[in-house]
Image 1 (tube, rainbow, N blue to C red):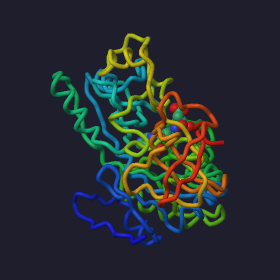
Image 2: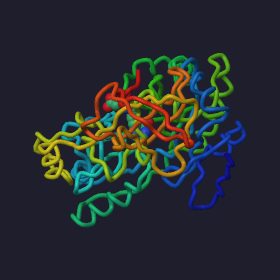
Image 3: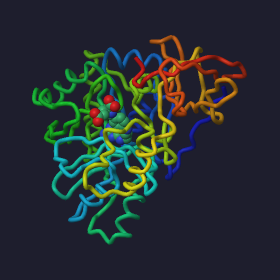
Image 4: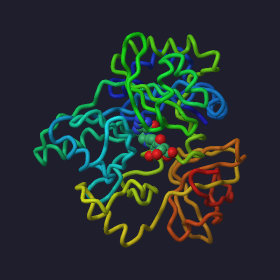
Length: 369
Ligand code: THG
């Protein structure tokens, strides 16, 4: 397949690490939140194996942080999400679906409460800044909303703790999954969360001093060879197997959080106020008509770049393939599909047309095990 380079411009923003990533040999970028996101350096498959055995450093600055502060900031953050944040505490990461008036998914960020009236919404790929500003204006809320000048490095993989200890000291061992705290390197303080877009474990370093961040990046590679540290990026194969959803790929504004399996983050019983609450209550009562499921498909390669790929059975469409990649673990294609409710059964068989030939597949759970 012919490949086309991305023409860079001011609209397609670089991160403070783009030059570093390029000197380390990035092979392809995608665009996410109007910004460059590396996709791989060697190959998806090589990096998949490396990520599961060693440790990687990722430039995930595209996970932009929308800062919301002011006396009405908690009200605004709660208005945007169906997850009950009324008891949210600083130091904890909250994965929270953002929904519109109709219950349609706007984004699926990690939300960090920094202090009583200061939040950071670390977003997936959609313009949450505009959504937040629209709500704040229409309700005359006393808030300040802006995209923070923060870039993020993720350290991911089974050796991430050992590497992080060498840089930030023994204290990092105390940090539990989905918690955040402040740690120092070279007299600079960093907010670090034990989180990241892989199932291999790791940390995300939120960098405000972008100059110092470059030194940190170089320091990692100076000391990382004993852990076989390599540059990397969110890995398509690993994240599909792990069931980590990708906004804009697996789900979008035409899907609601119940269809995406976010049930435990849809808190309809509590007395919180958020947009779309009435509609989500109705949707839950009526029952959803489709749901995100895992799929396994016979085949060695797949490309989702040209139009929709439908799952069929007996001349009936039973779902739409939203993400897919060849998995060396299963020696099959693995994917995430939005499947009509009647067909959301484990081992349910289907056919799919790939490259003009019809191949078979079956529905499975997420994560794919
Ligand atoms: N890290 C941070 N911000 C982000 C992402 C991230 N913002 C955009 C995007 N990624 C949001 N999407 C996800 C998807 C899954 C997870 C995090 C962000 C995730 N899920 C865990 C899981 O499914 O196993 C845990 C969920 C839970 O326990 O609540 O980690 O990667 N900062």
